[in-house]
Length: 460
Image 1: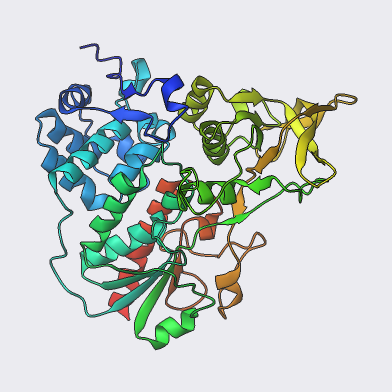
Image 2: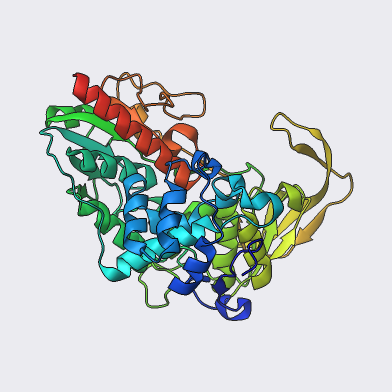
């Protein structure tokens, strides 16, 4: 075994997977997982744990995998994470745990994410569940939103013995896990629903079709006997460029496009929810959501372009996602910025006018500012445009709750360490506080809030 190199992970052939919604990565088997685990040197002061937002004891779980004791490995992970099969698939490990791995100094870091995925998948297939709560605390906590922040907060509180109810606005729980991430990256029935079942097995109730701010307000929850509330409602309000033609038929937000495809199964021809299957699609943006939208459009039969105003080195998407998109045939139009959506006489998209860009001096974020090149306008002929420019929190909850402070971006103001908001007994975390971020950062916020709620209720 070459300890400097990761054990390769099997994947679908790019030409085959570009035509289906089956999972791209096939993961490790037991023999491969044990071999990869053997590369870990078991650091006593493990930097990888410092890089994990939910503080999984990584050396300990990998240590169990070295000997083939997968159940013990799963129990270690479950102490810290409510969604290990999800995190093993979608976490940016390269900038977190694996980015701190000592093995990575002289070779490739240990494939921590793939080992977590293997462990969680093994537990699911073997019928192993997280340990149930050992005590019961006769206090009720309400959690708003069943995305990664809400599920984590609910799971941690349930493990402590609290009676937790999650209120979810949509007809299926899971939040961004079910509506925002494509099937080929995160299978819904096989993975997401099983992870949610694990949270339910801890005693958590989930009420769907419950829109806090409309069907009930936060103060109503306190009136019903809940003693604390966690807001993990995410950031689902899409942003647009404000350019001419943006209201045309055939212009989508990435949120709408992915929600139709994922939650409503519009990629399935037998679904009752249609989706526009463009023949040539432009996706504006360069983040992970842009890659998801582009790779979905490709699978629906479109020639797909990523239009991004900076260069490849500034793409905010994970390197793995960019690599997979290129392998599958997504075309990257970099240093390119849209200035107008063109339409035909019936108001349907038939092109997008763009200008070429060059990188100037760094802006406030530290990235070089893109500057348009005079006289460089050109047209990309497309029949659909997907805007993937980020999202912000829906103002419904904050606008219907007295005493809940928000900042200028509409995000709820909350203490980073414990998630406490300006309203007594109300905590918040995840994208509702930070704006759009990653699944694992939302989970970290849910975990911190659960600790804060426990301290609050213990002292109350």
